[in-house]
Image 1 (cartoon, helix red, strand yellow):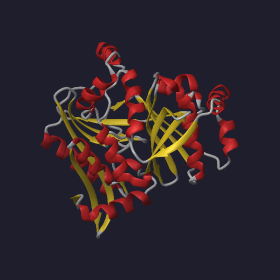
Image 2 (tube, rainbow, N blue to C red; image 1 turned 60 degrees about the vertical axis):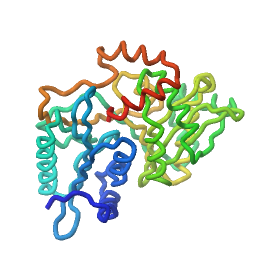
Image 3 (spheres, rainbow, N blue to C red; image 1 turned 30 degrees about the vertical axis):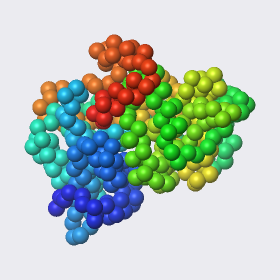
Length: 339
């Protein structure tokens, strides 16, 4: 039997996520609250049930945008998602439910964001990779595992006198993040989104700020899940480049995560051939392909909505020149549909 998630079922849902090796942080039920409160997107969180036990889950978010199309995504604004099921019967039932809903809503496409291929008969975006690495409990061994040139950057940040501090507020993080995103020519998410993330995930969401003599250098929002740390949103001010602030920041995330007992560092997704892709490779992480599998409903082909698409180059170049306050004002209106 397939059911829609109700508030009374959230704990059962999360117990299933925490017990499953295939589930990720992005399968947690709280993402439904985040999507609704931060963006007002309609969500459909389905679960399969047999003999009173959950046997599978599927979080879906409906994003209907005049600019970016009409899509049903698992899971929107997340790097991973898709169906997690205990058996083939539950998997098939959840897939059928998703395909039926996609057609009822009249979307352009249904997208499942999987780390492993789950729908081999569907086309998939050959665009993203993820970077994950096992951590040692010894800080010196983790430092030694960073390739020499990148390790020198981390040590330069330490020598420059950078320090890290945990912030409960999103204010300083948002300043650094929005400046960095504007410089990349990308619309920034609304501050409200990050406030909701911090509120909803509480101890599982940490904001680390990098300072130099009291001045803001960089900031990162990380998620903690099981024995993993996921530095998910980050950015730096103009000071970060000269002071090697970003290198120091990710080292601090790694160091603090080890002290919390984490064993896996998940650097998140990047598009092949981009600056973030090269940055993570320089840290000694090896890319793993992601399978963003697409069931075409009304669309004839996989939509190409990403900054590498040549048709967006003029927009990106213009956006980079926007004053920061303007980008912070206009950006959220666009970014809320870039799921």
